[in-house]
Length: 450
Image 1 (cartoon, rainbow, N blue to C red):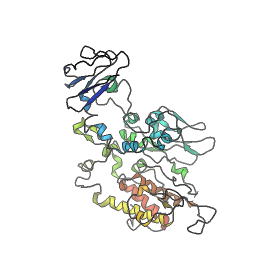
Image 2: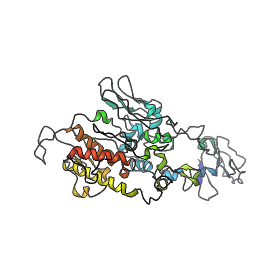
Image 3: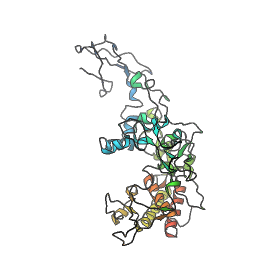
Image 4: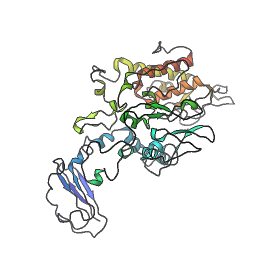
């Protein structure tokens, strides 16, 4: 079997195609460049398998690929290169072929977000659940109220993907009719629509419900295109039923899932203390939510948003926002919030509730751990109930709701990253209330509640 490799205008673009039938012919001469294609771009003719040369024009399904495919996707600074600089891609590479891939794409809740088609399957209703009523899948909800047990639990991915990666087709509705790799046509703006609802009135759901007897979630938005981010970037735990009057902490996996930015950004997903009101910052007024800062348009790339998803300081410096900002630590706000998160961390660790140990015996955070700012690596320290612990000589006591809420809020802020800049007002309120619930006094870094 032969493959054709033609070098495009830049001398670096290799294109390979194989046909599906016919005998291999002799390698013929490459014909002259084709006429300008759509948009005035050069067309590279890719012969299919069979008799080679200009006379063998697409005998079995070959296509004409335009060099305009370099923009917006395949140039050195195009969408694909941007995506390869993202955490989505780094996570894929780090776990490629690893044991977690099978877990993330098997019959578990993980595939709802981690499988390559997780979003597609959820929107299609392809999950499994017990009882009579499942989650509100079209609104991004994962949890549901199990009518058989009365418990709130997570639905299970029912797709068949074996690849755990978030890529183009995960978020965008791509099929044979609009995929340039299949049609040979150039990309046109709007031809890769997002899968999730993105109108001005569409709202996704956080998992947090109104009571312990239902799984109705909490509306988040509307945030337009940002709904695609909220669909997965949330705690995955329904904090309303997750935290009870008495909480036994027996696993390092206790608490919100990693990446719960939506719970913080919306100002609605934390454990909120009775008698307190909770507000949000001006960031929550963004039409497209997360997209505004994490995917600013790239002028040289047809104005399409940056797919590295890295926040851009330039978006903060727009008129009417933080025009004179030189970093994300605007007027020291990020530093102040991180100091508050650190105070909360120390208070929790003093009580023996945090660890970084990978296996038993689980010790508390060491002084070197407390000296760093890698909050997201902290885990819950399993407790021993009903018998004395080896280090304290006393049996652990279940946490009250407010104590467990403080631990939950710390993990939410630690795993939500960004030092609180997603929602500075809400973050400071959570820090203040959580610290005071543990110690009875306000944190030194935040003596007054916002």
